[in-house]
Length: 137
Image (tube, rainbow, N blue to C red; front, side, top):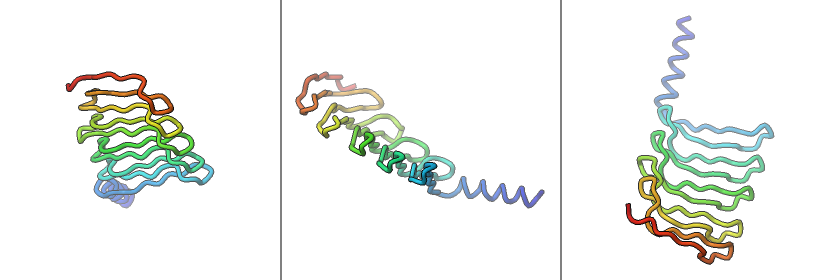
């Protein structure tokens, strides 16, 4: 029994005290996710893949909190949206989404999880169709 306790304690210590890379696969053997933990919390770059091997999302964490640039991709592996997070895990900075042809769909800014400044929405040709100013919050 003491051997089992010591082994369990050792595993817990290693999990909560060291940075670890976690790799997950689909049943078909293709890569599903690469993620990183540090002291039991999400930390570093995380990448998700579709079953066909296309990138679905690239994100970043620091000490369990969303940070930095997050990128989202459509089913064909083309960029779909980009958003940014501050150290508190709040949307903060440029937000941009894209039409399937790669042209800008929407463009705006966040500050502390709130839309600020001028936001634009465009048609598939990239022409601005709607604009709204959210102020400076």
